[in-house]
Image (tube, rainbow, N blue to C red; front, side, top):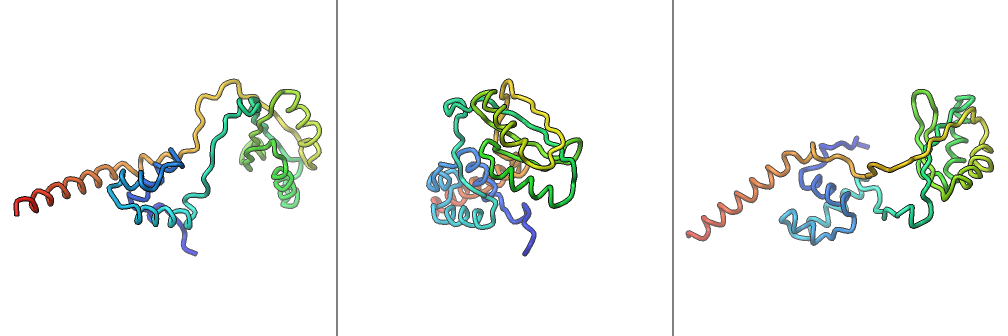
Length: 186
């Protein structure tokens, strides 16, 4: 299988990705209008980006406060033993815990970083006591609680990828205007 990289993408693909990550509900028609293309090629590009796995999924970002899950905790977990079987078992067990929204295997002082959302400190206490602590091989865990969310985004910085895209699109627009003038004078 060939290695995927940004060279597989042209500026139109990158512009599509930029707009989709800002608003996954944008229509193909709206994207086509932004790109000065017809709907069909834009639709085909989106399907290709999906099949190449540049677009992994479309989701709705829910309001944790309205869902009564206002407590966000970052829990650092260190393992006692670092062999493959213990790590794989931990990863499987974490997958089954609905409270855990994200889990990262880390390099450095801790082995895993968990992001957990719950409704209250009592609920978090019960999670640690009855679920997390039941997983074998946890040496230590350290929890920190989010006081205020300053920035939260799922969007990747595509600005550097798009820096010359606007130049290309403006060149195309200028060329189209020039062609249009030439045609009208004939």
